[in-house]
Structures are given as C-alpha cells and as structure tokens.
Length: 544
Image (tube, rainbow, N blue to C red):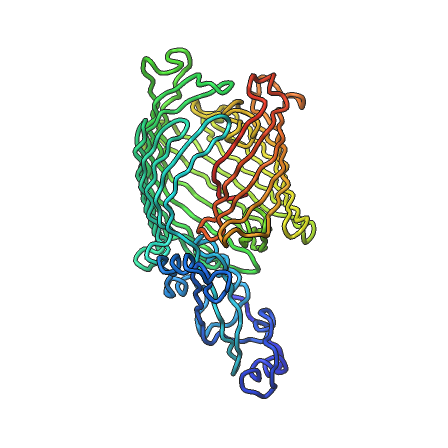
C-alpha cells in the first residue's frame, strides 16, 4: 500500500474546518487532495435509486411507478460488499475509481458515483450513489445476418431478489442447431468471494453442460485466486467452402481445469500474478454414412491433452472512463495500460496424454492515447502446441481499434483484425461473412487459414430518448476483408468490400443496454461471389 503524502497543517486544517465551522463554507477538497492530506474515511452512505426517478417530472408517471414497484432494488448489503474500502481506512482515490469500475461491471447498474459529501475531524464522509436498471427480461428475438435468419426466446433475471444473481432460461433456433438452455450464475456464493456458474444446454445435435467454481482476483490488490471447472460438449461440427458445408462430423469434448494463482500486490500502478494448475482436454471426432463429405475429407484426429500448467500476468493500470464509444450514454472503462498474459502447459504421456508436447498461450494488450478525443487499442495473441519437432494448431491474432470522439454524440470507429494459422487442427478454420463482420456477404462465405477484416464506422448517438426508454442512433459503415488458405496466396485486389447505413435502437434502462440494429449493406463485388448485391441485417447486440 502506498504511503500517503502529508500536507502540512493548512490542507488538513481546511479539511477539519468544513464541518467544525472554523472556516465557514469552505469547499470540500478534491479526491487527490484528500488523499494527500492523509484524510480517513468516515461514514459511508449508500444512496440507491430505482429504475425511474419519481422526483423527475418526466418520470413521475404511472407506468414508471409501476415498473419501480415490480423491480427489486439492488440490496444495500450487496453494494457494501463490493466496496474496496471501509470506514476508518485511509482515503485512496484509486480504490474509489476501482470500486466504481467494479460496480459498473455488475451490469445491473445504470449510473454509479462515489463522492465526498462532508469532512470533519480529519475524516471524510462518502456517498455511494447508484441507479438500478430493469433486469427481468422476457425476450423474443429475430435476427438476420448474411441471408440467414435466427430466432430466440428467453426469460432471465439478472439481479435475482436484488442480489446480483442470474437465472436464465432460453430457446434458440440458430443456423447450425436449435438449443434449449438453463443458466445460473452467482458471483458471490453464500455472500463469499466465491463465484459459481452452472449451465446446461439440450441441443438438436447433442448436449453441453458446464460447472465453474472460482474465486477471482476481485481487485487489483487481491492476493490470490482459484478456479475449478468441468465442461462437456457433444455436437455436430462442420467445415465450409464458399458458404456451403463440405464436411460434417460428430464432436465429443470434455475438459477439467484446476488452478491457483497469487499476486505480489498492487504497487506503482502495476500488478504481477503467478499461477499453476492442472488441465485436461479430450476431443473425439467421428463420421458416419450420410454425413456431408463422408469418406471424401479426413476426419480430425482424436486428441487427449493432460498435464500441469503455469501462468504469468503482468498488468499496468491506466484506466479511462468514456461514454458513447460502444454504448449509448453508458460509462465504459478502457485500460490504456499493458496487460500481458502467458500460459504454458506440459501435456505429458505420464499424465495420460496421447503424446508429450508443450502448449503455449500468449496474449498482450495495451492502449495509446493520442489526444483527449482519440484513443488506440491493440490486442495480440499467439497460441499453439509444440512437440517432437512439430508445431500444431499455431494461431496468431492481432486486432487494432481506434475511437475518435468527433463530438459528444459522434464517434468514428476503425478496426483492423488479422488471423493466421499454421497446421490447424482438422476441425478449425477461419470464416468470414455477414455473421462475422463482412456485412454485405452471406454467412460463412469465405473460409481459410488466413483472415483479414477492415471496418470503418461513423457512429451517431442520438441525445433524444423516446419515453425515457429508447435512444436512437445511426451508423454509416464500410467493410473490407477476406479469408483464404496460405497456399493460395492473397493480393490486395482479392479483398471483398461493402458499405452501408444502419439504424440503432438502444434500450437504455435495460441491464445489458441491448442495441437493436437494422443495417442495409451493399456488396461491391457481389457478381464475383454469386451473392445478392444487397443484404438486410437486423438483430440485437450489446454494443453499437
């Protein structure tokens, strides 16, 4: 913990005098000034607002009051347990900011603010103010991307009994399968720091179920975490060419994971975390007569990975808070600091693996602030297996994103993504089409072991709100990309491009701030791909 820098008596005298009256009407010091003055936290007051504010004449109507009565406000004890500070602790602005980020990450809070409201006798009283969102979500959705239509029905409560527990039932009709599923998530099991996630999905082509019990690093200064998980999956997997299925096969997969990690603590805005554990993964692939591509293409090889692994994370904290990047009028947190993660697993025959090899996963992300209105973000990852002088399923991915706040309600967004694979496992390929960002083309139109996609989008976040529920926005966009096999080569002229216009409708008082999208995309080279010139896309997403 950092040692606070002490102001000599002047600042602290002002601090004490605000309440005591020695200095009449003296203003409260700012957060950094309170920290520098060595102030301690006095009383912590929790101020909870419902979905709609009855003191606001625009929201003091019967439907809004009825919604408030139906909704259970997040309980005060839930908010208090998320606080990273207690009464009597030294005032630290970084913990105030981190607590706000953690509360926003719960996805059930519309607005959160923690501020000093009074100071006396070297103490500063804090007010934690939150406003809830609507979390009971019966939902019927229909979406269309790349010429394919999907539908879903779900009933979920994302803040069960005001305790931030999730219970969800859903049925989805997707391109490849129909799924009926049940999910339960408890981020604070029995009021502890343990998190429980359980899911079960009955699919038209199989079944999947999972169970995860973990204690995450809940703060930058958290000293340890643990994780235990089990997953089971049965499904039909497919390979594609020009949007058509060329091979299908049954996949059976099961995995186990146990891990423990510890941290040296948060020092100088940096965190180092070290971990170790055991991982197990088994994949089995089969094909029967009648399956697409039967006896024409090889079935992926069975794999069994088993052995210990070791992890390293090095994180630098440089968080910024922005609005109207990807969500309507919601505060979003981005880290400009470096976040480096390395994992190495030794899959060994002595642990039951089918061969001895090393599995390496590396990821790094960071941001660059060019000005108050322009921020760049970069993500790079590399993963693969190596053993007996061979490299398998080596995947390199790189993403660069740019956000330029042109005006308070306009953002110019640019993205470049590139993926490359070497000796990919038989069930893996990179797909590109209307469902993966190339909006003017059919679903999974392009496939290969290389993929590139460029996106430019001008986002307008409207400042008018219909019935205090829905905000409207607009987007103009252009995409260009391709997926191909490295043996075929690729030229700049081979890229496929589209451009178009879209409408956005954001449900602002909803817990996930879902955005309904309606896009019209024009394919520049539709004739070469034998696809429709115009694509109409609609659906719901979390972001713009």
